[in-house]
Length: 295
Image (cartoon, rainbow, N blue to C red; front, side, top):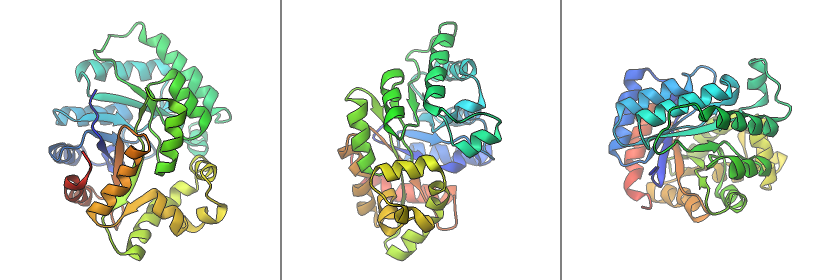
C-alpha cells in the first residue's frame, strides 16, 4: 500500500454532501496527495459509508479512517467492513481505529474506564472474525489512534502502526521509538497558510480550543512537557506553534516535514480556514502548498 508522504485530513470529508465530497476528493487526488483521512463522530457519516464514497469517486488515492470508532460497531462488523473495502479496492483502504473520548463514549452508553484493555480485546475480536471473511490482497492495514505509551505499545504489538492526531513532531520521535522501525506511523498536523502571527494563531485557536478540553489530548501534551498554562484559553503561543504550522508555503512545508525527520512515514495535513472548516478554501491551500512539500 502506497500512502505517499503526505495526505489530507479534513472534518468535512465525513460531513459534506456526497456530491461536494466527490469533487473535493478528485481535486485533491489530482494534486498528488497520497491519502484522504476522515473522522467519525457526532454529526458525521458512518465510517465505511464515507470510505465507500471517497473510494468510488477516485482512482488512485488511498482512503483511511482517522478514526473509525470501536464503540460504534462490534469487532466482527469492523473486520467485515474493512475486508469488504479491501477486497473491492485492493491496496486503497486503510483502517484507523480508536477508542474516542470519555464524554462521547458515555453518550453512546459505554464504559470508558479501561480504554487500552478495551482496544486490546477489540483487536483480538477482529482477528478471530477475519478468519471467516473474504481475503483481500493485500489485506487492509490497521492503525490505532495512539497517543500515550501503552496505546502505542498496543499499536506495535497488535496492529500495523499508529495514526496519532493533534501532535507535534516531538511526539512523533517518541512514537517511533516505541513502535520500532517496522510499524507505520502517520501523524496528523494542522496548518494554515497565513504569515501574520496574530491572524494565524487566531485561526489556530478556533481549532485547538475544543481539542484541549478533551483529556486524551490534554494529557498527551502534558506528557510532552506542556503546562496547564499552555493548555488554557485555547493554547499558549508556544503550544499553538507546536500543533499548527503557519506561515508561507515554504515555512509550512518545512514545519510539517519535521514529522518525517522525526520518524514518520506519512503526514496527514489538515488545512484550517479562517471561518471554520471549508472544503473550497482547503483545496486552495492544498494546491498552493503541494509544490513546496518535500518529496
